[in-house]
Image 1 (spheres, one colour):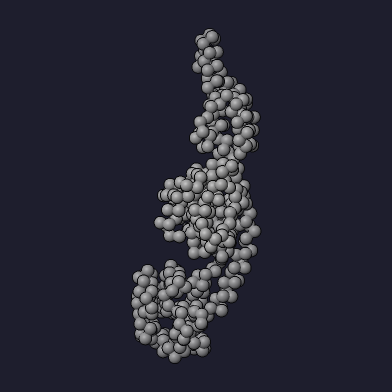
Image 2 (cartoon, helix red, strand yellow; image 1 turned 135 degrees about the horizontal axis):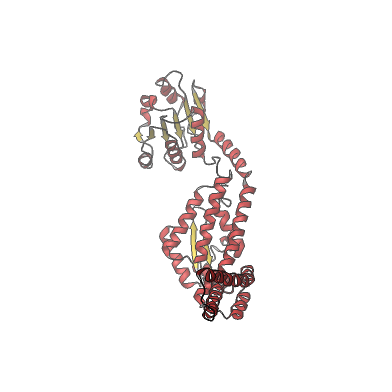
Length: 401
């Protein structure tokens, strides 16, 4: 779903499905709605209405799932932290999650609880990424290609690179090479996306036939076309090497399936050819290293969910606690004024001591009821009992926070 569709859906379901808050995360392989309701009584009804709005036909029925309550919180935290991604520790999902939060804010479909939940999920995800190794090892082919180029050539500052193939893999490699200091970036004019890629990375569009004349300007070639035939032959690379300095290195990264580069090219002096199989081994190894950090990341998610659950419970009791404290303070001040009016004139120090005494008495009397409220914050009957016992008056809006 694009942003316009998300906003339209969020506003419609909040208006018509009995929901108090809604946000939507829609990526290339998942669309999830995070929904909040005023109370448990309307939860099932609101969820069924929502699914009815989303799809009245059976075509998506087997793809839908619903995680209520704390199970839903944990799922949401796992998604934001990259623990529920196709690639463990996927970094992009956190940016997508923050964007989903912003879109819901702009659409006006967040209530206080859901806004807090999304913010806490982002905080936990950042903590997971910064304190565990779940996102550190490169697992995308573009990432691995850039890392290997930097490793093999001892750094990429001022090292030129040729990009053959402007698709997603080649584009990712070009951007990462540029970010690591590679320059110039020469994009071979091949297909409609080459010009857009060259503009995006500040590169130059070149003809493949001219690579031998441009050879002194680069040490890396990345190939990632969809061609069924070889794109770079041994003879082509031999001509490139003739134009390059003696003792220099040329790294060729063949990221295509089937291969773009003739395998015999790797036998040329000073040429290292790494294909998708070699990069796949690196990706598998790095994924294993990420997997070793999963348990630590899961523990951090569990801690984040537990802290949030406690915080949400406290929010339920907050209006009653505030009313209780206000009532105690009003009684204290009223009784203190009456007592002082019947006493001899007091000096400033005596007034201060009397003020502190009454504050201490009120605080100690309120300590147990406030603790009780915090422990039973999600129990409406307990809150009602305290309100009636102390004669508190809260309007409905204030009690809901």
